[in-house]
Image (tube, rainbow, N blue to C red; front, side, top):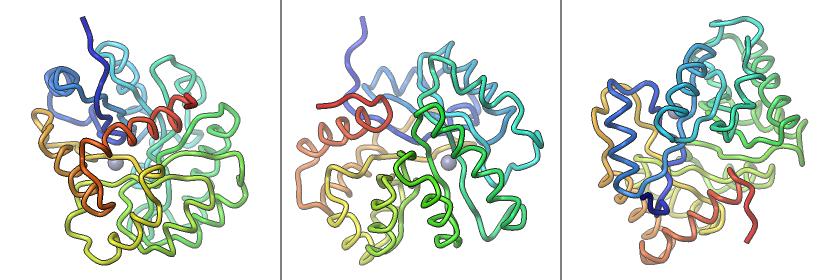
Length: 246
Ligand SMILES: [Zn+2]
């Protein structure tokens, strides 16, 4: 017998954890649904196979730090059509690590094109190159949805990403980001945020208490009770990732 999940961790690298089986099962038994992005083509293959075995949801894609695993992005398009795949990612731009900008843009745009073609949301990583990422998104305006993952930025950047049709993924840094998030999160509002832990290597078992703390911090920034915010965020997840309306 399975119960409906009460919360979703929209960005957690299950396939990179030391032992994905107890990690995923522990989360699901605690009522947490997992969405696991991939970082490379080989990780995408492994992630989809594990998702099928364990019943979590996967995203397939190439992170800017891992570019070059396969120059042509291999069988990403075929992997993206698996029943357990709900999005494309983790992809994006990173000014501090990876290929020069032009190479990163080319690989990102290949993934944005695939997401637009298949009608799948994206999970986007960004460090530094906000203007460059926003330029890419503008070229796909109206055809891309998804999450700006690990959002710790200003209200102005929140506005610009929200205007491109994204919502904000709030993670474990939330309580430490102070003034910027006190402005950006209420600007986005309860209808345009989701939760994530971004856990990967080193996480032996799923820490439900961490996700609860992120929920509590987000609720505090919005002046709401966590019990009230949880179901709102679940609806955001269903709308953006599973395209359920209501
Ligand atoms: Zn990640």
